[in-house]
View 1 (cartoon, helix red, strand yellow):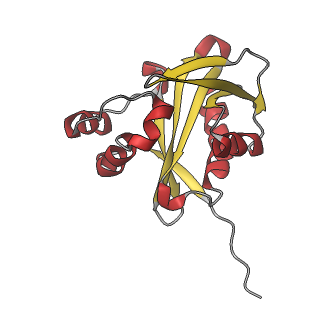
View 2 (cartoon, one colour):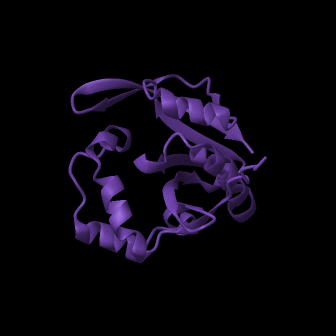
Length: 171
């Protein structure tokens, strides 16, 4: 019987060749409620971002491209709201529509912990998730994140109010 080899992923920084992918992801109006975006990014803005991407230790945020072993980019993970003295960072993940429900999100969240711990000395990861985003909640819970006992936050987007839950993971 043929056995399917385990999926392996790695991360790399954002590069110029990612411009079209990033432009599509950032300008997907279905995703704006999660990012708070209210108008599309221009090609020039995305071009500037991929040409000079922020670095965590300097800019308190960084994007990592999620790449399969054979080189296919399936998504990205962002570190942001970095608090060096607390060894803490917020994490967000996006998996391309063509690659969702494949297990890549959970695998990427588990693998990015190694970079967080080893490269940045982070010991606490935090994710803020809309209460109605059940798929994202499931992925983070399956990756070991737990609902924080901090109060539920109100989040308003396009005149609608949402509840924002905080999930944390100590690594």
